[in-house]
Amino acid sequence: MKRLLIILMLVLLVTFVTASYVKNVIYFIGDGMGFNHVYFASILEGRPLNMMKSQHVGIVKTFSANTWVTDSAAAGTALATGFKTNNGMIGMLPNGELVPSIAEILKSYGVKVGIVVTCRVTHATPAAFYGHVPDRDMENELAEQLIESDFDVVMGGGMRHFIPASEKGSKRNDGKDLIAIARERGYTVVTKKSELAQVESGKVLALFASSHLAPASERPDDQPMLYEMVEKALELLSRDGEPFFLMVEGSQIDWEAHGNDPYGVWKEVVEFDEAIGVALEFAKKNPDTLIVVTADHETGGLSTSTGSYALDVDKLREFKANTDWFLARYNVEDKEKFIAAVKEFYGIDVSEEDYAQLLNIKKTAKSAYDLPNAFGRYISSKVLLGWTTFDHTSDPVPIFAFGPGSEHFTGWLDNTDVPRIIARLMGCPLTYPIQKEPIIAGPVLY
Image 1 (cartoon, one colour):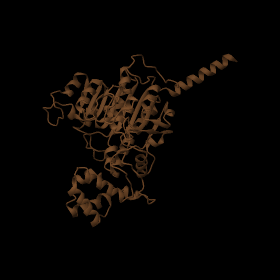
Image 2 (tube, helix red, strand yellow):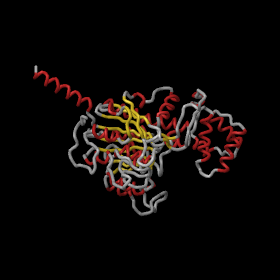
Image 3 (spheres, helix red, strand yellow):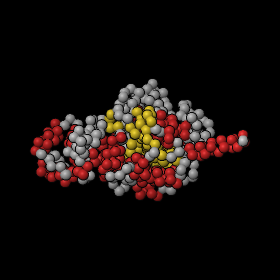
Image 4 (cartoon, helix red, strand yellow):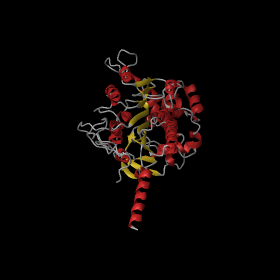
């Protein structure tokens, strides 16, 4: 009887470990994506999004070390390192002490690491996984740190921070050619979608734009969609069957929400969700893969009603362009063409009073954002969609998890909890300085 009990306990332990084993992690961050951004996109799509199919859902607090309303640098640092810092700081504590990210720690143990974004790869969120600077605007220094990281796959925009000052479009103030250095260190450097398709192995630095990639709703043919980059990243990272860690950011949800742009938010969330769909398909064939989806903060204070117990979904679905695209092509000072275009692209009849208000904003604008923000708020009001701000909020954000260990991402969490749980599930707790010991194959039970 005693022997039978021991055998049973061993079987149960083996079953638990097998069920919980985490070999690969795909970590999705929707920049600025709150609960309502997800639900809003789902309403317009008329279906549950891929991320909404998770059985394990939690709530994440996002405050930074010095304010209840975080920026992406502090939030990215929390999600990457497990430590709070002040707004604007990346990869270091408020006192300036450097802290390694989960990506850096895993890389030190031989795990392959990838970063895929639709912004500059030196922007706040991606930079938090390899960078250590007191000011997020130090993108030239971050570009150098990225090359030093030796990460295996890097895709996004930001070429201007990697080329010497002598080259057209450079934002550097020195002669450093980081592209040449990257090639010397074994990277294949690509700049077009067609070139990415030709890469079959090895380290890749893919920079598809001088600055950020174009928005999802107007991405040109030579720039890949996020799901295409994720497909290639997974192909490259999984080729040899060794463990990998991939961080994917839906970077531009935030920017569209800053502009209170309903069409832009819709299309950016859907692009992000399509990439999650690619990851879920990969996980079906690789069940030892954990997928975590969350956000760094909420942007815009999005509300799916303005208090009238209604939302004009039918009219929203007829919107055809984001506000930046529209205003770049139709000048509010050209009254007849502008009013006709608003009707064509948004189905909205602009009244004389509304037109006069928009024209006045254009004439008295103190910032290039004044008119786009006002126009986004205007078209939102016509479909009964509400916003509380053009900035970030302190609202908690969702977290969705799939695969082994996903049950740990439920209930109320702090953003610093997320990388710590991931690290433990990979058998590599977040500690600093980095302890050079063999990575544990399988979960830490706690």
